[in-house]
Length: 190
Image 1: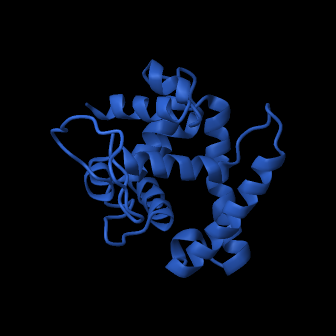
Image 2 (image 1 turned 90 degrees about the vertical axis):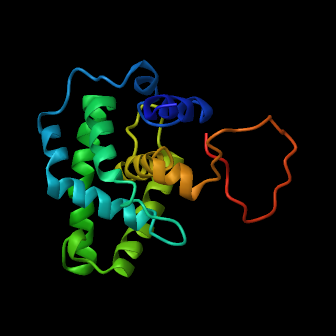
């Protein structure tokens, strides 16, 4: 199974709840991109995305988001799978993230200590949860939710995420729908 098939499977398993899920299944080709999506692939932008991802999924006993290079994945997904409206929300959200860091800590996100980044993200996560509770069907999604979704999707569909963070059998055996689960066991990779 290649990465594109894995992403399509994840989107289907989640009931198409990932932003742009309809593009995952149709091949991820949005024709009208925002003008500045080319900036998503600059080395400093990929580094920025990787640092954001590492704050959300830090290295522990398993590699973190940086090891999976979620920064590059985020750029591809925003460019190829988001509508121009969602691209604008995402790109504007990156600016808001840096503004929030400056407002709270007096420096940009990249200059923050890991503990300050976590504090910032906890606040933004609470903000997006409240927004999501009250948003109407046609309201846009919160930019931080987009960031989190892309980080998780990029990580858990990467080789690092599938083979080291999840249980992985390269050659699966028979299906066992009643496999014993012990609290703390890893989930299975697709």
